[in-house]
Amino acid sequence: MKLLDKLFGKRATIRVQFIDYSTEKVIGVSDMLLEQLPATFALQTKMTLADSEWQVQEAFPQNSEDFIKSKKLTLKLSKIETINTSDVVFSIPTISNEFPVFSDTALFNDFEVSINDDDLRQYEFLNRSALPLIEIEVEKINDILENYSQPLGENGTVFTKCHARDIIGEPELNINFNDLKDVLGVSAVGKITIYGYDGFVLNNIVLITSNTTFYGTLNSQTNTVTQLGISSSSENTINEIENIIAKFELVFVNWCQCEIITDND
Image (tube, rainbow, N blue to C red; front, side, top):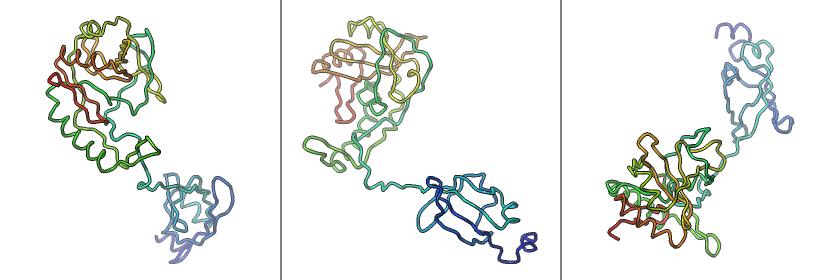
């Protein structure tokens, strides 16, 4: 501060001109104390003006040693728009916390299916050993269904909270791929993409019957399916679900409606 004192005295000020970055119009001029300004605007900087938050997009000059000499600083700002989180609603009560890895290539190319990212793992097969964890997640989702839902129009529903499932982890199924194709009566295998993302889900598979579209991941070294879910279904899908859970000793979960299907149902 000794150098600053020599240049300006004890209460050094900088004439700062504020410009709206989108319109190039001057929105204010202020004499600011040097200690109110950062040493550099090369780093991301936010400022509060008239009770609003602004992001510094450009600064002339950028560094304090330069505007100390000129006693002038011009800042181009963009207003930061905030969202009232109390007004945010969700179309579904739960999503999976896990997200897949992507690859430029696919294991199979007989056909291609695309889904939304919110649809990932909403209808999935899990090991029976996961039932205690499933019940914990279902309890949390039921709370949202009962206490954080509101009608949208005549037939719709939205939710003011959305639960991100985070205790199940990877399903780690151990389904023989050939046996699964035999159970479903299919031979063609496709690939899956997610809208808005480049590439294909790593090691993915897609199997389509006359009733259902199944997707999952394959360990090609052991020829086992480690994750299996459903992206589209029909009224006859329940028969295929029951065949799979009986053959491979699994459970099936419809997370958004908190439905669990076991071979004891």
